[in-house]
Image (cartoon, rainbow, N blue to C red; front, top):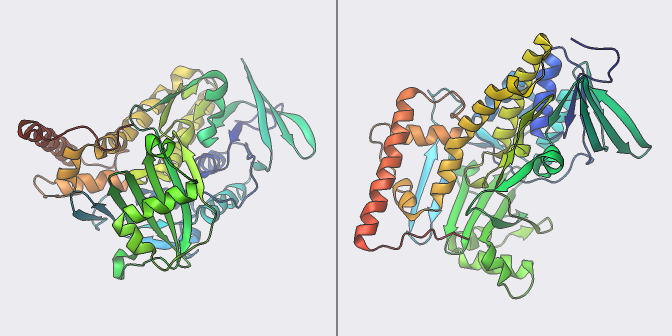
Length: 426
């Protein structure tokens, strides 16, 4: 499987959850892997809300016991509140499904460090950190990468590249394209708080989404009495602001009654971070001797917390496709079409839910869940990460029924003269 003329069989660009998941599975399959990460770990990162299928991937990686023993906040469900409709609903990850009945809310700096340490503990995995991949050049026999670190520049030779560079989308920035998702360009402002409201019992770990006229807030309880709080806004709201981003964030907190109540008496313990225009897809995500994973494939609005799961799931799928390619000795782009189809198909239910979430008709149905024809298990199945082959056929039918109810609700609203424009259009 290996070649002595190469420094590694596979070069992985990025050591986030997607890159470390791919690296671990590749090493388990007998390949030599070079992981290049430009940032020093641990480093602050949002995206703390995991979904249940992340636990299954951690188990297959062999790192679940360490993750569970770390002391992260346990989560059994998710809660959604709409201030204008005055509705609130919760979805629980119940036992008896093809996915776990719980998951975790994690400090990403610590979670990502655990995954990285686990990856490099495998024979054949070499870590270059902090180091930057400046350039890659593909040829018929492999790829040559130019790396830079504190000691200068050098070349690294591999047979294959995994782009796990996150939103930087290393390969797309050089030889592909990033396509913004229509209507989902937003601005997020976020920070950590200590002393914010904690909810009793099993609901303590629930990720909570609060929608209000100007946007929506995430509220993610973490261990050590910390809470990740972020506000996602129209770009036009941000552009029209008067004053600083800190003042804008404080104003939005006051406008969202539940968040204002939850944060009363709390203390902000990190700086205020921002990010914008964060919904996109990448083309292409496969090619001769390369695959993309995680946010280097697409980044979707974080409403339903799919980010870490999609990174880890695509990392595992990529490793399988690459191992099969090494066994055959063939690395043409067409060999990875099945990987791309699986990724696009698995991501689509999240994308449809996210796009629909900004639709008033969808919210009216979503926030008043009725378990007709298995609708609630179907919706929970998507939120749990069951779209990559775990959702039973009858729940796929239930999802179809759910979206038909949304269409009917939209039609009824139109007949009544209700304004149908998304409240969060940009």
